[in-house]
Length: 406
Ligand code: DNO
Image (cartoon, rainbow, N blue to C red):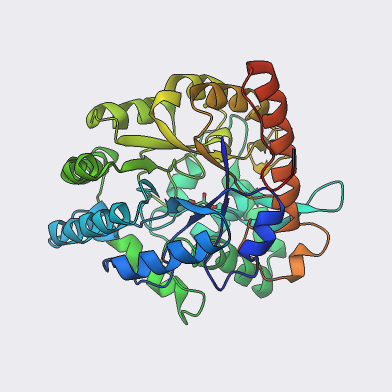
């Protein structure tokens, strides 16, 4: 697979010169400064593409070209927003960028409760605690109906999340509450979705307003809106040779009363069949899928490899109570070694990025985006390059380590 890296643009503290030294061939990025719902112009795209090319790499994948909430919940302006989306797609294709990652998660993109959860080895990883998330929902967000929903939450037999929330309440401090808000709706969201920015003064209020727009919206309704969106953009994708790759929901469960529609085998099967066009494809995010005990990641990779246009390599460990953390790229539930075999066999040129990594050896004080450390991701990238070299040897695929004399 093509070794790519998520880079957050010219302001990213991790520079392209650094990335070249660690074997990165392709860049995954977005026009992070263009406000949600505006066209990405050819000039803006060209400027960034040429900047990347100066460093001997290419702009391989857009992650993400965000879908506005109004498209997701079908507001009156959705056709106008879809037209904006199509124009951005045309402009990207005209600049030679043909692989587009996006997601259809309402309001909240990915979610974690702890961004620096200690590992036994002294490094840290991202972590999701159901009781802390429920505490946020009931006592901080104060969402109507949240308590009742958590009272009937039965995903983990024998676990009483509501009782844990009450226990937590006894020791919760204002600082810890503030940290939960930061972790759940600010630090993990600001740099990916554009709904909430790091400098928003009242993120909770904003978040409540966004949630309110989804009142009464069911899973089926959201699915129909995805079908509508995909059907509308497919002619442009065909005309311009664009491959769309939807990113699965992270975590792979419904959250905060919002429907989520891309988190299981059945969901993926539904969305690929709903608009059965090869340009409607998948970002195979092994991390998001492996956070759900219902997902057999290797089986899913086999089943969907032929409709996968972009791969995220990451693996989760699920604790006995159901909470999960991000594991080593050589461990956890995802079986990255087998995934490399499957995707390498499918297409050795498929863009792949290491998704998240440990925060280690000083990463914590560098102000990187949550999950997107430098040393931790570099460590994971080294592990994955080793796997790829081994798998390529097994499969008889020539392996070239970029940036070296062979
Ligand atoms: C977090 C990621 C998400 C994902 C986007 C794709 O690290 O899993 O930000 O990349 O949602 O649209």
